[in-house]
Image 1 (cartoon, helix red, strand yellow):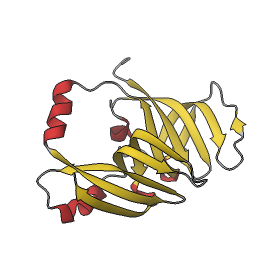
Image 2 (cartoon, rainbow, N blue to C red):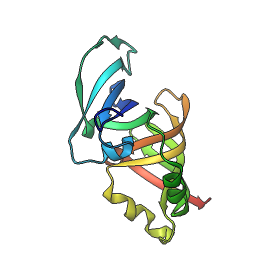
Image 3 (tube, rainbow, N blue to C red):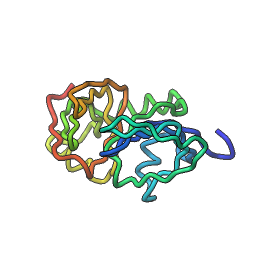
Image 4 (cartoon, one colour):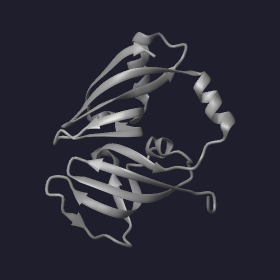
Length: 169
C-alpha cells in the first residue's frame, strides 16, 4: 500500500478484448472498487489481446480507462491479503450457493455467497444492489468451448442473461 492506495492486478474481459493490467485503489478488494460509483476503471495495461483474432496490442507504459458497462467479467490476479479476523467474520455471516450463469457467449459454474439468514428464494433479489457479483471456485466456458478454472471471478450483473441457483452447500 502506497499513500493510502492498494495495488491490484486483474484480467478484464469484454466482448472483444482481454486486458490484463494493474490499478491503484483506496479499496483493498477489487469487488469494492468495481462496485463504486465511477463509470470506468483506470488501469495500466500490461497485455491487451483481441478475443477473435488473438492479436496482441502493444500498450506498454500506457494508462487506460475501461468502461465498466463493457466489462463481462474480471478475474482478480493480485489483491492485498485480508486480515484473518475479517475473513472469519465474513465466513460466518454468509451461506454459499452453487450457481450457473449465462453471460453472453460465456457460461460460468461457481459459487455465490449470500446473507446466511436470508430466505433462499430471496437471494437473487438481494444481489440486485451490486453491479459486480463475486463468484468463487468458478469454471468459465469460453465461446470456443475451452474451460478455465479460477478461485474468484467478478461478473457484471448487467450482462447476465440468466443466473440459476442450485442446492445449498
